[in-house]
Image 1 (tube, rainbow, N blue to C red):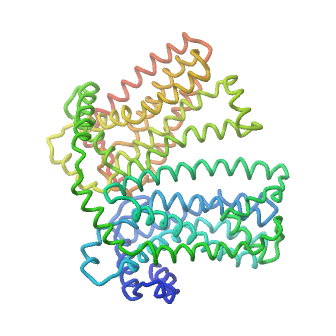
Image 2 (spheres, one colour):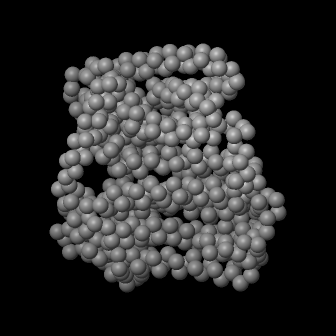
Image 3 (tube, rainbow, N blue to C red):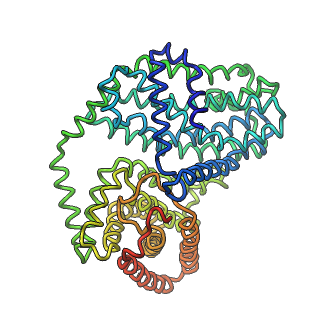
Length: 559
């Protein structure tokens, strides 16, 4: 498979050479990178040293993306206007692809681990940057082909061979468009930002962009999909012709389908010109001095100070650790997690957007059946849907716990096993409390202030009960599925089948807690009883979590 993909990306060798890349060096670098990829553990399912298991993991990965593809193909089946339906389809795929680039693949572009091999050799910056971009292209096609396969088959079944044939061109252009636009912005930031601030700027840019794309996904659902079911006319909204997804949808006008917006039949040319223009800008103007700037980042990271800030954070974490934990083991887990979550850009990149997803998703559901957002705000206090918002905060805490256990430097976890630690559960409880205090409580307080301001003082007891119930729910999830020491497993490892089943079964807990809370909504005495019972159960679950032994730990390879 790698040989086929390498052959395909090297087909336009004349183009790569005209942009200043050395073709033989480019092929050699890509070949080595792909061989190293094969030696990594499978990212889905069981970790194994056997090549057959790695192939099975790749197959499971493809099946997962294919299943997701069935969700994206609904516009193809539901919207009769083919240009419009493909605009919606490629718009959804483009958002998913961009999020993949932001969260998972941008680190490949700025990976400096190969500098000791390539820097002493006569390899120019344009070859290095292009090799990294094409490496990401291969990764993306491994995901986008199974993701788009259901839509491709459906288009061919409904429209015939012409529509199925043209499908390939906008699909390729979509991948190149997302890749070169996002990475072009990254390289532009690299040129403009100071070396000591570059990775912080990139991190915040990724967080803001992922939040923006998540928000726009729901806005598109409200603006496009809902009105289309009521006979919405695309010609009333001419601004759609400026969207890249519309340029991809107009490809179907080339095989005979009508275009509602007059004069836009040839906008598909923009979908071809756009990525070619960005790759020219990247290689010609942004790639030069790439290696020198990457080396400058490494030097500044090694020499950064920030002593006063670190000392202040250390004092706060030590005081909170002593206040919230009774044993030295739990205090150690608290302090380690507090410090590492501040240092890990990967952790912040994956967790921080989740705190924005919760209110965005809440307000989307709130306005799904309303005439307008202003109407929903005016009548919001007439309903008790604030319980949904309070209990949705649990997913932010679960996200934080998920990435609390993973790290690129997971091998450093040997210190846990080398220390005279008899009960590892105490370390895990300390880490749980650190995330709860540092991230969940400030987030929950912000949501609570909004709830009390909107619904009045009557919601105060609901806020308190929801806080205990959500913490109880998350503690149960941690007890069932997150029996790992903090930052002790590799980032590529994901949930296996057994762990997924356990997590799905544990999702019944918030349903029970939420329905019980809703049942007691108008009875303060019943809320107080639930509050006492939930508090007792929370203490029992946390105590059980703290007593987790080495024999009860979840090993990465056994998931």
